[in-house]
Amino acid sequence: MNEPEWLAERFEEHRPHLRAVGYRMLGSLSEADDAVQDAWLRVSRAGTGGVENLGGWLTTVVARVCLNMLRSREHRREEPIDVQMSGTVIGREFGGDPEQEALTADSVGVALLVVLDTLTPAERLAFVLHDMFAVPFEEIAPMIERSPAATRQLASRARRRVKGAAPAPDADLSRRRRVVDAFLAATRGGDLEALVALLHPDVVLRADRAVVPTPEPIVVRGAHSVGKGAMAAMERAWFTGTALVDGAVGLVMAPRGRLRLVLSFTITEDGITEIDVIAEPDRLGRIDLAVLDV
Image (tube, rainbow, N blue to C red; front, top):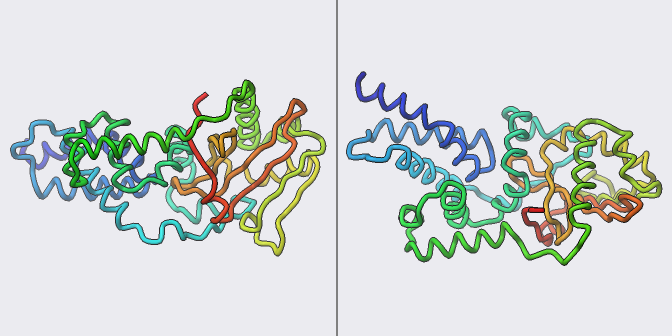
């Protein structure tokens, strides 16, 4: 076997790992695949002379490609929301295989992808490589032209963003998590009866004007009406996951790791009494989001 064939085989062996690195760095399967392919072109041209740890070296190459891609993203925070209540635009808007994209996001954690998207490229690189793939800070530092100590600080700052502020003491936090998880599962499964059972008969849903283009915010009242509206968003629900929303359990919808919509819940012993659906960029920007771990 000649050198190019050997390198191609070794690269394919490492591709799943490299794709995982790319996905956590970029939040998109298609972009991760682009990054891995770009890395292969670079590696195939450069060769592996003097490389002792091929897996570590390939990880570094992919990470550098992803860092460049993150830095080149323009107007990331000004992208239009363009979210419809039916959720039917998601597959077309974001391309690729929506089902695979959704399953991958679910396995990694939608909330985690959302929080990662708020980090600077250097913070995201330091956190992802060190905390998720155990790459030493000494190897990460040269990629972002920082000292190992400064790189450690970047990862620490990112870690605090991921965990968020400690939520107020709430003995019912786990119960609220179960209710919100059940709401999401019923929506994904199209189970209207199960969804209505979670809602207070007089539940009120409020959706701002960015959710559905209307002159005024939408208000929906009653368990059956709110449940039917949620059923219309089944496709969108696959890009949705639980998160801490201003210290309470809520849902975030984020195709390709880009925050598009937040659902905030008021939950009492009688069920879900209020749902606030937020999509206006200014409102989303003021929400404190973190990964939920209960």
